[in-house]
Amino acid sequence: MQDPNCLFCRIVAGEIPADIVHETERTISFRDIAPKAPVHVLVIPRDHVVSLGEAGDDHGPLFGELMLAARDVAAKEGLSDSGFRTVLNTGADGGQEVMHVHAHVLGGRSLTWPPG
Ligand code: AMP
Image 1 (cartoon, rainbow, N blue to C red):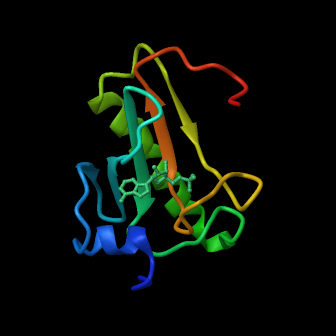
Image 2: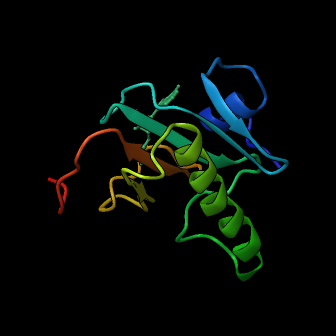
């Protein structure tokens, strides 16, 4: 199910262009428009799920698929050996700006921890 007012649903629908790097039956992955690292890809479910905080117990398999898609994106981007970071921002204090769940995949340089 999609929300016509949601930016990422509109990317899934092909209404807004995106640089798609990986697709599965239930996920798509595309480059972040304002990359924070040499590789910065967002992995999202095709269905509209607001956030991890609002996920239901029945979303377990979908979140598993998101993580495995993140793994496959990292491999495609050549990050399997060097490593990468996978981030899910949730809600206001978590820094979530787009209310359609997305995993950031970041890599291509050494990333500091904790982030600022
Ligand atoms: P978050 O702050 O976790 O909600 O992350 C939202 C991310 O979406 C940010 O890193 C933005 O740069 C990114 N973003 C916003 N609009 C677009 C877009 N049209 N295409 C690709 N990435 C986007």
